[in-house]
Length: 289
Image (tube, rainbow, N blue to C red; front, side):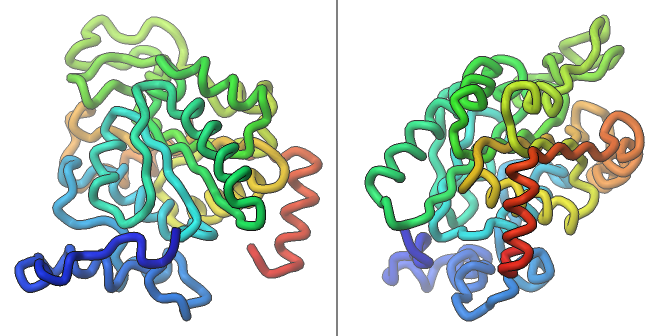
């Protein structure tokens, strides 16, 4: 793994669209000399091609850029994703990714992390799971929780859009009570599963629930979660990224939808274990936060 993860064949450079060239030349982690890489560079740098496969205005696309820009060590990171809307974006970024079967992403990530620790004992390799609520909270719940029980040193990020948006609009365990979708016409009859609380009960040293409405907050949380996972144990981040299509919203309404729930169902929740809290203090002293 290195900074030149993504390289265009020289013979094809002359016919490539500029946004594809930018993904190699102007992605934030391509600038080795840039010490303060982060979300401040998003207006002038590239993390995701504009013509990605998600719907216009999808909050997941914007939030993915915040996540990628916040990675502490992108050139030594692997993202494990699962089938769903999130997986549609990964062919359009310039990082190492592994696509798992639906729901087993945490099992795959556990194996990758252990293998990397054995193969590269002197290098820090970050393994990050990024999947939707169907793969994380619903169908993949067993694999998710088992990785917490085993204290695997990985970060799990759930892009929680509260619906099976990739298959027509079925409810998931993460859907809010009473919510109606095209393929859930009667409405959800039980409460949303509070995955961030399950994560705490299951042994996560860091668990956060928030929306993607505040880029700086998202970046801070992602960086803290990955640093803690390196040394202490499993971490979990639940990010509300609403499906504007299934909610019947316009392309410009995603941010407003997230902000409207910032102080309601997605009021900021943050759990840090004593060990993780001490480690974060050490990171701040060393200038890593």
